[in-house]
Length: 250
Image (cartoon, rainbow, N blue to C red; front, side, top):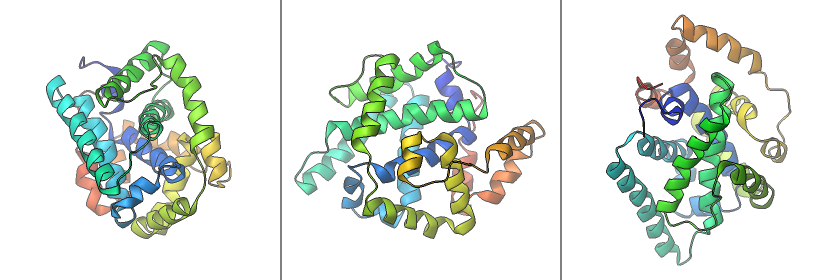
């Protein structure tokens, strides 16, 4: 992937990745296949760590050379196959597609929130990266281009999301692991990047209080105060990991 690729710009900034994480953590909770994430018990025990590791795998693939990226994708596939074997069932292809679709959506939504609108060409490029990831995982029924993805994404949102006891439990775990203040910040961040159906199912009010704060945060980056802000709002155990996300490509 070229160093100037927009995909590397998106995944080379901790700010953008944090919003990808925030959005995905909301949508994960509503997915009809979330019971698979509960099967091993690791998700409820460490929801932030498990979701963050998913995002980090995607980032590793974006920044790796071809062979290393393929190896990382095969590792993800192997982990899932092991879980399937233990449960004696197969994770449905639509659930895998949902995760890919989330990464595409939240990459776009987060970058456009914090930076600028993406061009159609840039969206095509982003789609292609995750399309190739899906093909390597031997997923079926993938859309062939960004335009098809937009249609299929809407269908998946309507068909594959539901608020369940898993959803409620997962948000309880978020609050437990983040604390009240950071938990409120997480939910407000989710409102800025999640599709309307996700916000509706989670019964969020539609007035994100962070919207005016985003403008102030952008100004803080210009005078290099953003690292101080992140140091204040982020959990201590993730600060070093999150600092390492910023690259020269962004």
